[in-house]
Picture 1 (cartoon, rainbow, N blue to C red):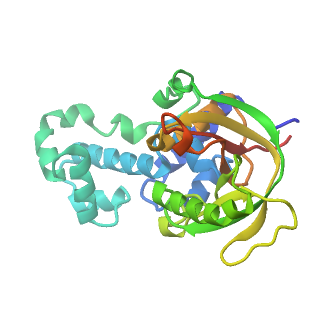
Picture 2: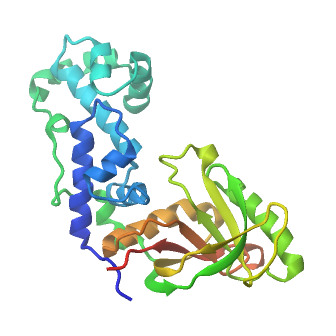
Amino acid sequence: MVVMQHTAMEYRRRVCRAMNFISENIDKELSLEEIAGAAAFSMFHFHRIFKAVVGETVAEFTRRLRLECAANRLLSNHFDDITTIAIDCGFSSSQNFAKAFRQNFGMTPSAYRKSKTGNKVSKGEDALSLRAKYNADTEFTNLSTIKRRNTMKADVREMPEHNVAYVRKMGPYIKETCEQAFGEIMEWAEPRGYCKPGSMLVYWDNPEITPPEKCRVDACVVVPRGTTTDGQIGLQVISGGPYAACHFEIEPNSYHKAWEDAFAWLVSSGYECDDKPCYELYHNNAEEHPEGKWIFDICIPLKRQ
């Protein structure tokens, strides 16, 4: 099995290109596809890779950069109209800008400008956040803690195809959506003897692109080929091939961190994602665990060379 692999430095270079592209177009509404393309990433898993390297989502990074840009403009161009600054920095209106600014800085733009008047000369037009460029030598706090925080077991393995029966739910990737899907597939599977370790949750959409209410998640159980289903129960084949398998034993409230850690390990190891959905492969029922923990693998598809 030979899979595509880059150095962590290559990931840094490409993510930096994405960050610079955002910075250079801070006044525009860029699509995630445009940003990923500027860094030669596939859009499918780009949002998770960006978060693993930078520590912020693309949306969070863009919003912060816009606010910092506006704050610098408030100080370096003391007589510029606040609405003009808001529009120039990518905000749709002065009202939206004022609300976001207050949430971030704890005061209105005009109050911020008055409170910082004494720093106006030292800030000037060369303020760092207006001129900053990112390169492979940029120190990312998130990257520097990857190895320290990742204690899960992870490896690359050739996964088989899985012939599954499934229930699909549309909605945000949260506990309630997944539990509802699992409950319905298990209600069908248990009387037929298909309820065993190896159930799966498959995530089809990118929550940074797809509206939360339209995201698709499938709760799956492995069934023999030729199995017949009825009602809302469907059949599909989950692709086999090389996957990064990141093993966890966690409490139910730790899923978000598990996904962050899995992609942090992927980036630090240099593997390149394939354009297929990730899935969680379960090895137990938390109700039967003495500490109520789930034991599962986050499986991330990888490109072959």
